[in-house]
Image 1: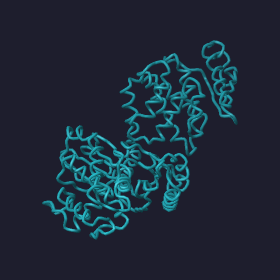
Image 2 (image 1 turned 30 degrees about the vertical axis):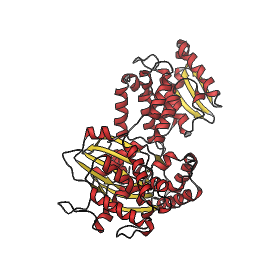
Image 3 (image 1 turned 60 degrees about the horizontal axis):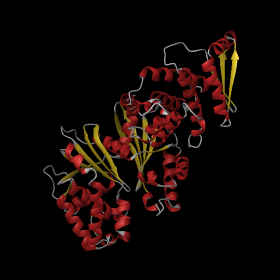
Image 4 (image 1 turned 180 degrees about the vertical axis):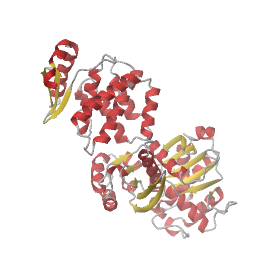
Length: 505
């Protein structure tokens, strides 16, 4: 990051938000914010594909955000997409259109990564307490639950229920009656029962709500006198207030007939679903009251960016934890990493805008390429790739995990297995670097490597090696010859030039 301004884009299932902040030391001061009501989740058709109307609304909003971010460095912007992007079956087609409209890459984060970022945002806005905090964030398509202490999350969960999806399913057209409310609450309680027991066992001293549903409820309760005030006079959500609001909604029979201070027209259609989920949460978690925090996903994204700015990248900690968990041979990982980076430096100028990002990805791939050995040595690269793709990796987006998985899968064995997977063109360059480094370090000893030079060609790569070393290393020479066949099967060339050492210098 080169500038003092950073930006977070939160592509939620209900609304899209842009937050711009200024870095001062280890703090972020909000400067500018935008909100666009997109209701992306409402565009999910029965086959879970996004309809054209919702895509159009999303692209229009992203173009407006893109204008505000036009002068930002790519490293200073992080855009994250949540549940609707996760579940949309045509998301792979829509994502490139969304990225083009915004002008920046978009990360589709997992539910638990979303929960982690939410907690980070809440933790930076609430007064520190000695006890644990239960944070609940009811979004448009999913609800996140976090127990944490200080800035550290302890438990993270994401459940597939949100104010839009619940409202559409149980309260079509805004109609509300006792039967539909009971069904909506019961469905939410059944989802909650999968996590309630371990959360109660961990325990918490304070419950906190964040994001739109919690904010709407706390404002309605306060402005309409439905909620008793706590000893500090701070508005919050209470069990009594929820029951009163529920009764008023049932009497109205239709959300359109509800006349309440603080109930915005854009929030009204999704209030019944959000209220049903919140009521179920209070019942299952046995809550009497819940505070509210303005901190949410977008603020968490900003502070996560700040951590990377100060070289405190959670992804680095995650990689180290995986190396420890899967008993990685750290000396071998270091050998492969150093040699792979040597090749990347020959192939890609450090002035390239992609260099820093690709270099970091290559190092992580080198450090994790052998984690699959803990499962089985046979075809361990497949196990490594599977773990990286499907494990919870805090700090990594789903796209990052897919790229890492693809590079690790390609570090040995048949390259044809990698070809059907979607990926970025630069991935082949990273696969080549990692594959060649792993091959040259197959003996797993701290021995001097030959002077191998690499270069890119129009259709692949070229290796230049010392002819004396080549003659004295028949096993390695044989493996390198086999490599030419692997790349040829992909329609790419790997040319090996053998020259005397004098001509290499």
